[in-house]
Each structure stands twice: as structure tokens, then as C-alpha cells.
Amino acid sequence: MAELATKGEKQYSLSGDLHTTDPSEPAAKPAPPIFDPELQRIAELSAKLENPLSGFSSHELVQQAEEFCQANGLNDQLENFKRGAILAANPQDLDRIPGITEEERQFIDWEGSRRWKQPMMMYFIAILSSMAAIVQGMDEAVVNGAQIFYYDRFGIPTDGTKKTAIIQGLVNSAPYLCCAVFACWITDPANRLLGRRGVIFWSCFIAGAASIWEAFTYSWPQLFVSRLALGLGIGPKSATAPIYTAECAPAPIRGALVMQWQMWTAFGIALGDVVSVIFVDVEPNVAWRLMLGSTVVAPVIVCCMIYYAPESPRWYMSKGRVADAYHSMRRLRFCDLQASRDLFYIAKLLELENESLQGRNLLTDMWRVPRVRRAAQASGLVMFMQQFCGVNVIAYYSSQVFIEAGFDRKAALLTTMGTGLVNWIFAIPALYTIDTFGRRNLLLTTFPAMAACLLATGMAFFIPFDGPGDNRRVGVVAASIYLYMAFYSPGEGPVPFTYSAEAFPLYIRDFGMSYATAVCWFFNFVLAITFPLMLTAFKPQGAFGWYAGWCIIGWVAVFFTLPETKALTLEELDYGPSSFFLFPRSIPPSTNKTNPTDFVFFLVGVICLCVCLNGGWII
Image (cartoon, helix red, strand yellow):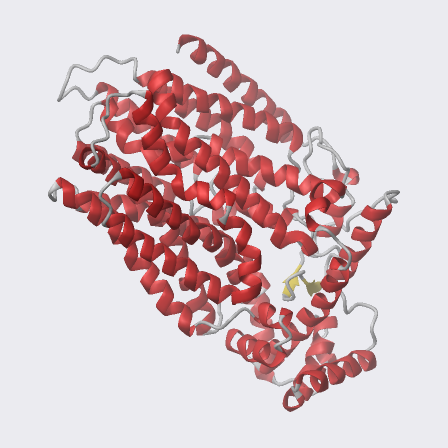
């Protein structure tokens, strides 16, 4: 979540939890006047959302707490809510809280000094979210190993014809087609109807059922339909699980917990590759069925875990079930004072959110309101490039690529397992670098390296292959792909979802994330269905060279148009310019200056562009 504009104070983030800012940072300069009435209204509303309790006296806060408890049947917690309201408005001044105990002081102090000391239920939520991400990764990965077996079972020739390539692409891309055109767009209404827990449960249930269905298919059209159904389990889960985690977690650890979605998805991909290796020596007609069917285990675990997890307090509040929201929040915090404080703050935020939504059309706001249009442009760019940087060519087709390079089936699957492990291991540093080095800098650093690795992979296919025992070509291909995954994991891996989650104003965030994930899954579908055709037409040299070129295009687009959002408040985002940016280190005009590192990035990008252009000419 974005920081607060008031520096040097503890304040509350937009999700309703305590957030500590760095007193050493200089205060943000006042934003210039805004002459667009619509943008002005959104900016004023965002300022209110930054701290809806500012400006109220202690007496007024106590009165509001009394009215809140009486209206929602929480009179037994009245004293806690009175103290919680004062604490929410004055989080640094604990001496103003009447009757605060030493134990309560300790719990509140831990929010800043020992942020990873949390109630056991919070750790349970973290494990649950990680398991949901593992489901996601395994669903994406096991088809990579299974496809080299079910081609023979279904009589799909591997002769490189156009018809064969279309069938291969259709089967592999089916879940992402479903996500893009249907599943992502039902996420918002499904969340409103079923709640966060309900959506996670049913999406995992569908994913598990689709896994069993896949394992018992007897023709490629049946497999295609079963994988379409799998998309109903992938889309809503990918959008809901991170939101559920964010709404349950306290602010000091929220970013790290949400970031773990990408890390554990990478672990799920690696686990799917391990499963493929485990079953590689089984009878071929059984091996691919076991690979696809094995993904039923993780969804069953998540479905069992979600039964014991509390619903999101914020979702309960949006439904007017305040007493349920309090009991849920109490399971996620150490003491009644913390739970009362956070729930009261969420209630005030929801009042402002409801005010902001009156008379609005979210769909037209996506292009009519400059602030929202900027967010849609930026999130669409990073989501598009997450696919067209070529990573899912490796995730879905690396076993086929390695066989083309000269590996046998078992060696291809073992090498594929290595790509999954590299992807997971190198995702871990992003937990620290994304908030220190910055989102934009990570992309600018990794895109040129990814382009060089893809170009090296393609050019390696010019190395003559003299049959089994000749490891020259396969060694270069494997090393280049491993290096590529090492650069992808801390950059284009975690940045798109993190960037998209913070780019949109609060009132349109759910809809904006649905749009962003739909862009991601649509181009995932495009990549998955076209790569077999590209491999046939361009050969490996041209296919990998194509995506190397897109990495350079992505670098140029990020360098010239993508603003940095690290350490910016939503108010600062609202005051930014309405169009794309030139050398945009950050959005506010007062800080929109060229960073010295931009010159270094520019030189590196030009060098890599020249290398790729020369490599493309050779290919």
C-alpha cells in the first residue's frame, strides 16, 4: 500500500491498518492546483481516504464510537471502541488512550519493532495464501511435462505442420482463454456474493475437479474442454487470494505477504516440474494422466484450510455484518484494542468509499478519468510485458524446446525442473528489492539481460548437433534459459501484480485489478496458442529472437513511459500528469526529474538494442 503524505508520523494506510513512515524523509512539496474538476474531486477524496479521522477531537471520536457500537450491536465492546477510535486518530500518542495496559502497549509497539510477531491465525493465513499460490503454479506447470506423452496417446503428430501447432496451442492455452474472456470478469461479482473465502474455496474445488477430469480424457477435444474448466479455478483465485491476504494482514507485513503470492507460484511451478520427473519412467499412457491428476492434492488441502480461516473483516463490513467483522478481526490481532481500532477505521474508510462510488460508471472511468486512465495504461503495459517477455514459452514449452535441442525425454524434464527451481530461488530477493531498489529500476535492469539470454538461446540452435553425446548445443540452450529465469524472477515476475495493485485509486481498485489480470491472461493465451506456430514458421532461432526483441521494446516503453510508484502516496499519484511521461522517475511534477541512473540505464539499453538488432539480422 502507498505511504501517507504526512511524514514523520504514524498514520493509517488506505486498508485501515497502522503504517509507519520514515521521519528522515523530506516532506512532500504541495501539489500544484488541478483544473480538471473530475480529477480535483478524486484528489480531494483520496486526501480524505488518507486519514478520514483527522480533524476530529477526542470527544467527537468517542461520540462516533458510541454511535457505531449502538448501531451494530457491539455495546459489550463500547469501551474498547472508544479507546480504539482515539488510537486510530492519534497512533503515536499512547498516553492519550484512557486505561491502556502495559500488555496493550507492548502489542502496539510490536507493530513497528517486531512486525513478524503475529497471532497464530495470521501465520495460518500466510500458509493458506502460499498453498493457493502453489495450486496456481502446479496447474500452469504440469502440462509442460504431460504434453510430450499425450501427443502420442491422442495421435497428435509432432511433424511441425500448421494443424499440429494449432492443436498444441489450443490445448495448452485453454485455461488462459477462459480466464481472459470470462473467469476474471466474474471475480468481482463472485466476491460480492460468496466472500473471499467462498471464492477461494470454489475456485480450488473447480481446479481440483478439472485436474481429475484432465486425467481421464481420451481425446484432445476432451482435454481442451477440461482445461477450459480449469480456467474457472485459475482466474478468480489469482485475483482473490492476494486481496484476502492484504485485507487480513496488518500493514507492516502486508507487502511482504502479498509478494509471497508470486514466490510461491514459482514454487508451485517448480513442484509441477518435479512431479513430471517423478512420473517420467511410468508407462507413457499412464504417466501423463498421473502428472495432470496429481494437481488435485494441493486444492484439497486449501479447501480444508479455508474452512478454519476467518473471513476478511473488510468483506463482512461491506455486507453490514459488523459483529462478524469484529470477531474475525479479533482472531487476527493480539488484543481487543487493536481489533477495535482497525475495525473502526475500516468503517470510516468504507463510508468514504461508498460516497465515492455514487453515480459512477467504473467502465467509463477507465478511460474518461485521467488518473484512472494512467493507471490502466501503466498496469496494462507491465502485464502485457510479463507475457511478451517470453517467460511462459519456457513455462509451457521448455520440455519441447529441450527435446528439439537434443535432449531425450527424461533429460528434457530434468532440465525443465531446473528452470522451475531457478525461478523460485531468484524470486526470493524481490521480497527485499521491490521496495528498496524500486519497481521501475528492477524492470530496467532485467529487461536487457533477459533479451540477451533469449537471443543466446535462439542462436544456440545454429550449433551443429551430432547426435547423443554431443552436449554443445544443449549446454548453451540450458545455461541461457537458466540465466533468463534468474533475471525474470526478481523483475517481471513480481512487479506487474504489485504495480497494478497500487496503481488504481481505491474506489476502482477491484475493477482495475480485474482489468489488469484479464490483460495478463489474454496475452498469456495469445502466447501459448501462437508459440507452436511460431516454432514451426520461424524455427527456434527466430522464435526466441522474436521475444528478445519484445524485451527491448518493453525496456524502451518502461524507460520512457512508466513512472516509479515506490514510496509515493495515492494523493501524489492523483496529482500526477495525465499523459505518458518522459524519463519518469516518479509521478509528481515536483519530483519528476531525470535520475542519474536513468542515463546508465539508457546506455545499457542502447547497447543491448544494438546487440539484439545484430543478432536478429544474423538469425
